Length: 225
Image 1: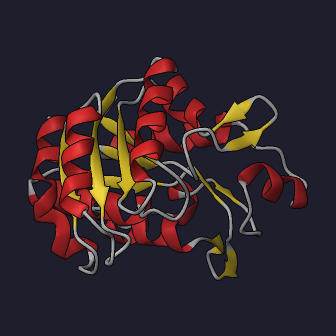
Image 2 (image 1 turned 60 degrees about the vertical axis):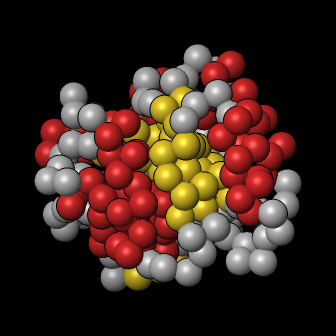
């Protein structure tokens, strides 16, 4: 199987897709045939490709080859809710099987596959199934995206503890500047570097597009290889 990595986040709305796309650009610049995947996405809209999600479309566009949308996002849900609620409203039950089939197909053609999670580490997908189970059952190393804002220290440390408690390998963390007015940014980053149980693999500033931020993630590329 090709290399792959799971992109987890300290919360929803902290820029997992932005970081995943920047990482895809960095991997492609280093000569790797990388592609993105969003196994589960809620908040999809009807298009000529079927139900589509903006985050999954961004991953599709950042991948090294043009891929069918359904391979990138095999579980597409309409309402912008927690996946277990969106699935209930769509009268479907989320399971790992269709996601794994899509992942295996991508893995045959690309290395690495950058798998973006949904919500935070313990976002519920179905009874007894959580976002964490994708990384755990597929045995993927994890990169944690830390949204740089007030409260990020607690969220990052709790997420890191949960990732390791679930038996997953925390490859490192990436800071993402989501609050341009954050106070004591450098001091918070220093605290994260001191307290987190894995290395900082890059810090993305607020504003630049993923392709412009790719150079900041050379450490993440090196960690994968």
